[in-house]
Length: 137
Image (cartoon, rainbow, N blue to C red; front, side):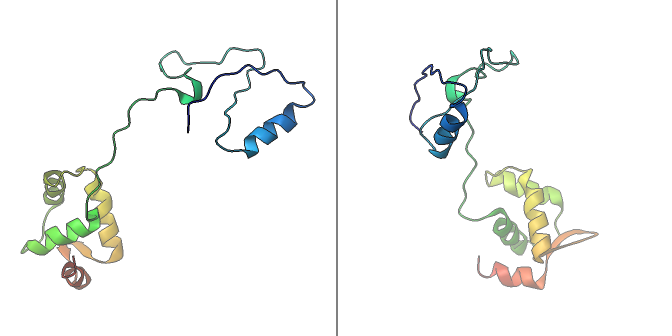
């Protein structure tokens, strides 16, 4: 969205609803805050709280984009192993690949839900469906 310019606009109370609806129906044209003769309330902690239109926000760390999903990575990693593996192995494999280790839990859950991975007392192993899928990754 292009940079917006602040303008003080006074509107009759009767026409206020119509003007706001018109502005609201045209996305990307204007952002408006109803002040009603009050200063905006801030919490005093966020230096970007009063910035216009959100102002300069804190830089967001972009997520890591990989060629294969976490689920496919787990299937591929487990296919290389001879026996059951512990959760710590999967976390370490994620970290070595440059992924967030904490995201391994959700990827393991999705693999388990899809029937690719099974958990037993020794750790995680591929099911027949998982071994079949590993051939195509």
